[in-house]
Amino acid sequence: MNDHRAPGRPAAPPPSGPTLATQIHWTAQCVLAVERGRSLSEVLPGVPGQLRPGVQALTFESLRHAGAARHVARQLAQRAPAPPALALLHTALALLLGDPDGARYAPHTLVDQAVDAAKQTKDTRMQSGFLNACLRRFLRERPALVAGLQNDPMAQWNHPLWWIERVRRDHPEHWQAVLGASQVPGPMVLRVNRRRQSRDAYAATLTELGLASQPVGEDGLLLARPVPVDQLPGFAQGDCSVQDGAAQLAASLLLAGRSWTAQDRILDACAAPGGKTAHLLERSDAHVVGIDVDPQRCERIHDNLRRLGLEQGGRVQVKAADAGRTQDWWDGQLFDGILLDAPCTASGIVRRHPDVRWLRRDSDVAQLVAIQRQLLEALWPLLKPGGRLLYCTCSVFRAEGAEQVQAFLERHTDAIERPGVGHLLPGNTAPMGDFNDNAPSGYDGFYYASIDKAGP
Image (tube, rainbow, N blue to C red; front, side, top):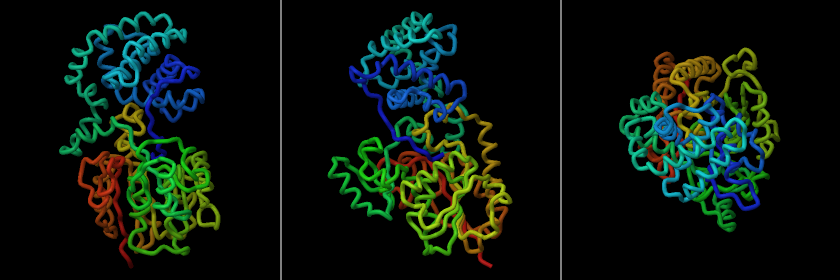
C-alpha cells in the first residue's frame, strides 16, 4: 500500500463555498462507512468533487481521534442511537477532541454546524436534539471527560487494543512514539525524475515559486507545506512524483553496488500504483517487468509511466497477473533483481491512511504473513544466482518484517542477507543508520531486507 494521499488540514469554507454543516454531513457518512468495514479509498470517490478535499481532511482528522471519540460517546449516551446518528456524534466529538484550543473552529460553532448536519438527512434528523444535548454536555464537562481517556488504552492511543499490544511487544523502547507518530499527518515528499533534471535544479525552481523544500535521500525533496500536485512545476510533464522517503529507498537498495544495463532484468512484483517501478526506470537502464493482480491498478501503473515519459523504448512490461502464480505469466528467463513489495497490514502508513487501523483485525496479520511467505517461495526460484531480492512491507509489525525474513533465511541456504535497513519506524523513533541523516520529519513505517542469492 503506497499510493500516498497528500496530507491536508481542514479549512473554514469561504462564504460562497459549502457550509461546514455540509462537510460534516459527508464526513460522518465516510466515518460510518469505515465503521461498517469499508475503505476510504472506496468511499471518498463518492463524495461530490467540490467537497472532497475538505471532507477528506475532516475524515482523516475524525479517524485519528476515533478511539477517544467512541469512549466519550459512551459516557454521554447510556443507549447508543442508530448507526448514522452515532457516526455523526463520533465525528463531531473527534473534531472537538482533535482541536482542543479551537484553532480551526470555535467549539460552539462546530457543535451548531454538527446539529445542522444532522438535519440534512432523514436518518439523523430526528436525532438532532439528542446530538445537541450530547455535544453541549461535552463542552460543559470536557476536562473530566478528557481526563478519563487515560483509563482506556484505545481512547488514549486511538488504535485498536490488539494493535497497541503488538506494537508494544515488537518495539518495547519506541512503541509510544510509533503510535504517536500515526496521529500526525505525514509530510509531502517529492521524488525528482533524474532523467529530466537534477534534484537541485528542481529545488531551485520550487524556491523561485515560494515553495520551500529540503533534500531527503538521493532523489527526494520534503516540502515545508503540502500543495496540490497541479501547483507543482512540471508535474504533468513528469518532472516529479509524490512518494514518501521510505518508499524511495527501494530503488536505492535494490540497485546498490552494481551497474545495471539494458541486458539486466528486474521484476517488480505487486507493482501498483507504480511508484517503485518508475523509480527503478528513472535510476537504471534495466528492463523492468511490473506485475499486479488487479487490471485496474495496472492501468494506474501505465498512467504514471506515461506521465513520467518512461514507457518509450520498450524497457518496461506491465502484466495483470498474480505474482505468486508464476506459471501464468513467467517467460522462463531468470531475473537479475526482484523487488517484492508484499501485501501487508499497512501498519506503517496509518498517518496517511488513518482508516487502516480501524479496518484491520488481529487475524489479518497471520493471513498476510502466509501470503508473504508464499510469494517469497514462488519468486525465489526466478532469481539468478548472484542476483538480489529486495523484500519490503509498509508495516511496523515484526511478523511481516524481521520474523518473516529470518524464517526465509532458515529455509534457504543459498540466501544471504546483506546489511540493510530493517524496520524503519514512523517519525524519528529509532536509529536508522545513514538513512536517518537527512529525514527531518521521519519516514513512513517500512521494513526492508536485501537478500542476495549465492552464486554457482
